[in-house]
Structures are given as C-alpha cells and as structure tokens.
Image 1 (cartoon, rainbow, N blue to C red):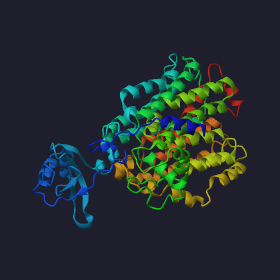
Image 2 (cartoon, one colour):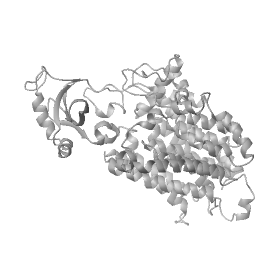
Image 3 (cartoon, helix red, strand yellow):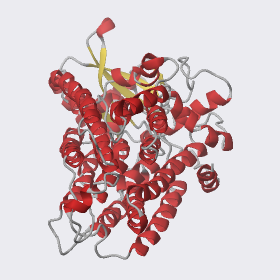
Image 4 (cartoon, rainbow, N blue to C red):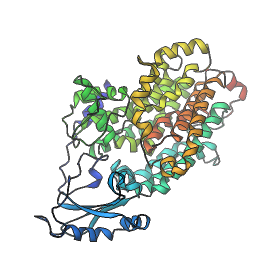
Length: 550
C-alpha cells in the first residue's frame, strides 16, 4: 500500500497533453487513445467531396506511387483500389479477391491539402501497427541514444572487473544488452531483422540458466570489483527517482495499461470482465489477461478513477511505477535471503541496481505496461521459497495474471527438494483456482493462444510452424524435468531454472515482445550475481552450505 501511495503521489502531477489537431498514427491504438477517423465512401470518385481539394481518383493516383503500394502490386497485380474519406484526408485501400474472399492487402493515407502520402503499409505492417516503426511511440524518450546508451554503461560499470576482462559475467551482461540491437531495427519498422535477432539472445540466456541451474559453480572475484557499494546505493536512489520523473513527464499509456485500469473499473463496479464488451468506444480489446491482472490495478484505479478517456489514465502510470519499485525492493530483500550478513546486503543492492539500470525495465515502465507485475511476483515467489503454500500462492497469482508463469508450477512445487511430495501437495492446494486448470486456461490463454502476430519467428515465417509443437513439447518437458532434477537445489539454482523455463515458454509463443524480458530478468540477475563469491572461497566451503546460493 505504501508503494501504491508513493506512485499515486508522483502521478498526481501528470497533466494531460492537449489533443493534436491532425491525425497522429503513433497516438492511435495500441499506442494511444486517438481513434482513427471513420471511413466514408464518397458519392463520386471524379469530383472532390465538399471541403476537399482532391477527388477520389486523384487520391488513388497519389497512393499508387507509394513504395508499399508498389511493392504489394508486384505481389498482387490484380489488386483494386477503393478511396475513402478519412476525416479530412483520404485512405486508399487495395483489395485482392472478390466477394466473401475479398482481402485488404495494402493501404495508403493521403493528405488532402498537400497531396502527400502520410503513411502506406502492406504485408505485416498492414494489420500490425507495432511493426510500422513509429519513432518513440512506445516508451517515448527511453529509445533516444542519450538515454539508452548511458543506461547500458551504468548496467555494466559496477560489475566489470578490469583484472579479469574475460570474466563470464561480462559476456552475460553484454548479451542481455544485445537485445537493444533488435530494438533498434524494430524502431525502424524492420521486423524481418528485429524478430530473428531476439532469438540468439534468448537462446544464450536459456542455455546459461540451464548450466547454472544444473552445474552451479562459484566464481572468483567480487561481484562489485571496483566501485564502492555506497555508490550503488546512491545510484539506486537516483535511478529510481529519475525513472519516476521520466514516467510522469514523458510517457504514454499503451493499450496494456489501459486494459488493466478498465478491468479494475469493471471489478469495482461489479461488472463482468469477460462479457465481450470490455471497453466500448475506446478501441482496445482488454479482456485478454487473467483476473489477477485487473485486481492488481484496483488500488490505483480507486485513487485515480477511470473516466472513459484513454488520453488521461494516471492510474496506469501509478501502477507501472509501483510494479517497478516493488520489483526493485523485492530484489533488495532477496539479496539478504540468498546470502547472510553484509554479503547479502551487497547482493541485494547490486540486484536492485541491475534492475533499475537495465534499459528494458525502463522501456517497460515508460510504456506503462503490466509486465513488471510478473517480475514482482517472480521475486516474491523466491522470497517465500521456503514455504510451499506461499510460493504456490505466488505462482498462482502470476498465472492468474498471465498464462506463462503457470509453467513454473512443477519447479516451485518441489522447491529446493526437501520433503518433495508433501511440499508439492501443499503447493498444489494453493496453486489451483476454484475452477481448476480449465478456468485458468479459459481466463488467461484463450485469445492470446490463437492470435496472429508477426513478432515471433512463427508469425514472421509461417513455413517454420511445423517446428512449434516440437518446441512447445520441449518446454513442457523442461518444466517437468527441472522439477525433478537436480533432486536438491539451492535457491539460486531454482532462480536459474525458473528463468530457463520462462524463456522456453516465450520461445514457443505466437507473440513475443520486449516487455517479456522483465519476466525472467530478476531471476537471471540473481543466479548470475550469486555465483560471484569473492576471492579465496574454496569448493568445500561452498558445498558445506546447502541453503546458500550457487
């Protein structure tokens, strides 16, 4: 409640931005709440409609010259254009086929006054606005080099040991930052490059987490080799304050955050979540998450009630800030759980610093998405790892928000391996909802499992779809295998294996986006940072402490 209150006070300073006079594609769903103008078929294509400079035929002639339209004509030479009035401009849609099989294959928006093509799309960009490369439409200034690159340096600086330039931790952190290359292409609208570039990073981290989880090894050298730990404390405070300020001053609520607030509004007014009429007139389909996602937004929606207007959603800002701070505070506490004494304090500070300095956590927060809620729940599950019912409840909450965390159920059911079956039974009682697995599936997977998306290799290259059942079966097998082997695990091994399972689930997802990195990032940082045990620690001393992390 304290975190929610602090987040609310910060967001109370938000002043809604004035509406733009002209249509702004980057402020339309899923980026913002400016709904596209309705399309109207003109009575004549030869004469300009009242108030227009161009006729429909002139708009078609201009649209025909757009690069996207020319590219699509090479693939669909028989496509036919239809001109529509789009507010004060023109939209020319190109259709292939006829009758019930008629399909829109390209479109262009033409400014009526100047005759310029404002936007033209085909292929994946036609129905996926996320693929169009609108600069800063997601997370705004976080994408700017003067924000992104300093964060990358901050993320690396405390953990670089100049005396050991080839320390494996250096490579691990660099690979995590390597997702920024994919994001660079995504921001340019080049998803044929951005999507494939995510998989080497995810694959590397998956394999590293499996190695750490199965073959734990202490590594020489302190976690923070050069900088004083007090500097990290100052860095944590400055980073946290700067992130809040940036969110308040320069962030836009995308459809994910709006959905959480609208769902909370439904709950607070006793309305159904899944009735097919989630947010009429708002331009989002928000009933795609589990019920706990909307419950988590209740305190923020109570402080900043939903008024039906996407352009002013302070509750979403407050929730995103709170989820982010809760994860950082949870990591501070987790360090003390993983190591005793001053070492635990140092570890907790380093984990919190790593979370706050990693660019993609700020990217998620400044988009006001809900994915840091999953991160906070994952950290919470690690904090209560010693209690089977408590960790079962945490995994259940994560699964009741988004389906992916359900894959962690087998691993957390066995925990560190002590009293395995008794713990698993206690865990299962806490994990299952009243309606059982069917309710969990219906409430959280549904639409998400069947949606089409170009933001995965499966959506971008459908010819590879025959491999997806194999990958998904492998993810299921992995989730079960790590629950049983190794038979005894340290908490850090559990963190590493949990991260591996989450990544395996994400690799088989139809839709993947950069927000999902924060699901496994805290677990990855915990597993990697704990392995740095300082100078002179013998193998025997490590093995003598079964409750300590690897």
